[in-house]
Amino acid sequence: MRILIIVDTYVPARISAALQMHDLAIEFARQGHQPTVVVPAPELNRSWTIENLDGVEVLRVKAFRTKDIGYVRRVLAELLLPFLLYRGLLRSPLAKESWSGVIWYSPTIFLGPMVHRLRRRLGIRSYLILRDLFPDWAVDAGIMRRGLAYRFFKQIERYQYQIADVIGVQTPSNVPLVKATATRGNPRIEVLDNWLSDLIDAECPVSLQETPLAGKTVFVYAGNMGAAQGMDCLLELAEDLRDRNDTGFLFVGRGSEVERLREYANSHDLRHVMFMDEIDSKSIPGLLAQCHVGLIALDPRHTTHNIPGKLLTYLRAGLPVLARINAGNDLKQIIDTEGVGYVCVGDAQHQLSKLAERLLDSPELRSQMAHRGKELAERRYSSASAVSRIVAALRSVNSKYVIDVNPTGRP
Image 1 (cartoon, rainbow, N blue to C red):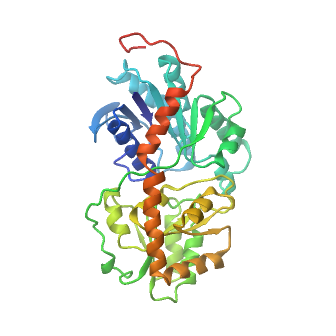
Image 2 (image 1 turned 90 degrees about the vertical axis):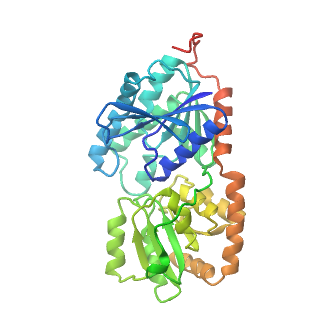
Image 3 (image 1 turned 90 degrees about the horizontal axis):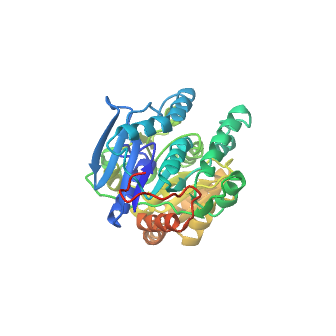
């Protein structure tokens, strides 16, 4: 199949969405398909550029910046994003090409207009990879109220559901939540597990032996540090364990909460806590190999369900997991059933500290969990499985937009 993949971030960006979609595109090519990725590139000084990256055709289109800017500017930039991407596609040598299906990734929720135009023009089926339920998670986290802005974003969300033939959500519990919103268009909703390819183990530029964490059992958090994560609990955990000389905490990544968390650690004199900027994904295995437990945090106010990409990173790296999550999240059942770590639900900070100490005091337990985690990652969370599921869905669904395409392959 010829597959068009539309994303708002892609490598060389280091965030999990960019890495995941790069893995997915490579796997499409590995399975004999022809993927083309369309992604915004604010840094371009021309309207578009095409490159071949690891066997994948990538069209980068000039667009406004949508990352690490204020909320108002971000909303405006994302509203314009699908139109700029579509214009860039039409101006590029790919303008007359046709595809068998279109895949897009959410977040962002704003790519719907481009997908709609492609479906109308080419008569192709569509698959939405849905990784979080915005704007509802923003309301849960206290970032947004159910006012005018919420209703506006909710309409955008409904629109992208309406134009999808299939929606792939992260967990079974998200299916009824999406179904309640997707009241038009009648998309098929299925579970599409997160995925991660084998990590490339390049030389890591960071040696923890040359830091204050040398010789300690290190709890590591690697990923975005934003409002959705509710990161305060992890700093409070570090504070609870400050009297243990054998314990250290490492926070790696970027996000809206990083500076505030740094200030918290400094003001509370948490000398066993260390922050690092995000590093190249190829160096992550080498860094995690120097750590002992992978940390996950999700704001307990969430009513939606999320399987963070960092879980897969920890499992593949052979780290047991310690997670603080919202009640009812399917992540608890996965971690408990598979025996790959411990989970604290809600605001029970004392329980989180007890679970951390249990991991600290038993290297053998950590080793057993790490072994089971590697097996789980291989069995359930692979890009090969994700591609097979998406292809099967695109081939089986009957899109209301499907039309005949002439023998030249042009619409």
